[in-house]
Image (cartoon, rainbow, N blue to C red; front, side, top):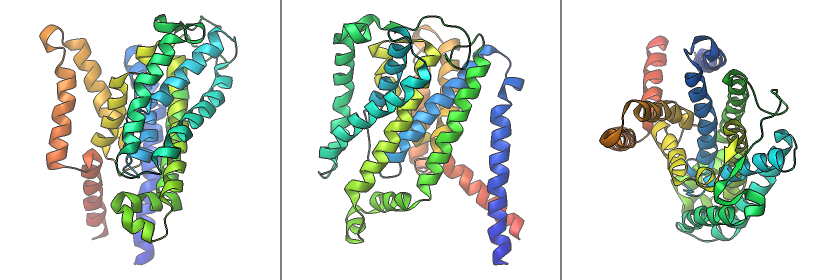
Length: 331
């Protein structure tokens, strides 16, 4: 009986992965327009960035308000490599990761030594500082006017394509990698330590958990994922400026995706992105004038309802439904 109960959830997980991968990689076959495919690219990239944020904000309850800095570093690195250095964006991604890791260590080292919300305050300061540096360093970043990536031959080496379909596959592969990283961390020793820190920091310390080390490792992994997402996003837009790279709205979106989808689920941020990004895009297209703000208002309404009725997010609802389904099947 125990073996059957063990195999059944495992089989469901494998079936779930297969269904998800089929739905994901066949999207170009059933999405009706290039606009819809570009929207799917945004869900993949911003969803991956939110997954990266959740490795720290959700797993360890260490709220970061400056993760968009790593995202912007990725965007600028790709733009500079392609426009000024005339090098492949694939060479820019490792550089963006290294730079983001350096910034993450610079912020995490002093703030994780302290208690309370010092980390949130430190990361909040990253946003205006990053935008100020990007605006003032005109020789490197183009200043307020930004950097436009030159049109290059279409192909995987340049990450420029005549249609959005090839870029969708690139972003989809990265999304799967992000999910695998998040799941691996969640079920690893590090994930258990972060869960202990999230539940009761004092008890975790008494149990021998090195909070500083666990948080720092989580922050570095998180920064790397967000930097890669930003690099691909910059290659996708082929343009970057300080307001786009270090947008406060994008920072909030990364947090909202995770909250709406479910902070405690490794797949929660993707679910939140798949719900909120289409809502926002639809509202932007269909509403204008005094109604233009309804898209953002819908974010607030959804968040309020979840906080009141389902604090574990939409993922909590899905998990409860799956448990009822597997419970009925076992009977």
